[in-house]
Length: 112
Image 1 (cartoon, rainbow, N blue to C red):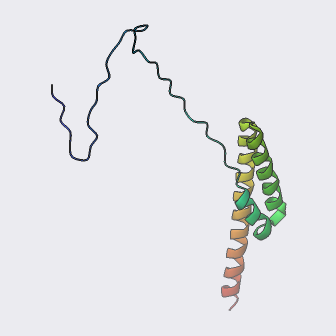
Image 2 (image 1 turned 180 degrees about the horizontal axis):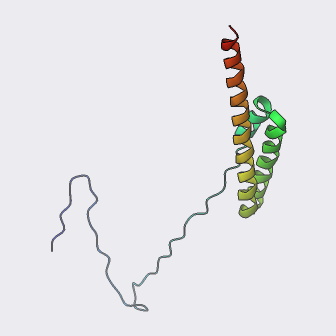
Image 3 (image 1 turned 30 degrees about the vertical axis):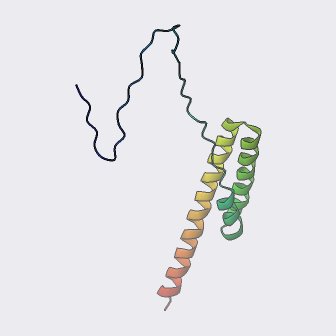
């Protein structure tokens, strides 16, 4: 059968088949790149300065720095653990500060 290609699409190609051990035989191993965990340092800094309710921002910043340190040293498993803690604490701080601001706004408008 003849392969047809559409405009803009890449043309089909064929590689010569060879037996293992014969000249021209190549083995290609595709390795998935290692995904480095995020450390959430910037978000933790904002949580520390603007949403430090119950010191969650400080705790998130500490875990973020630990995650970054573990990532630099190559211990990606521990970096992922610290990253999850930092993310959880940042989310908790965000929820608490959002609820606080929402309550303050509602009280301001309801009091009138």
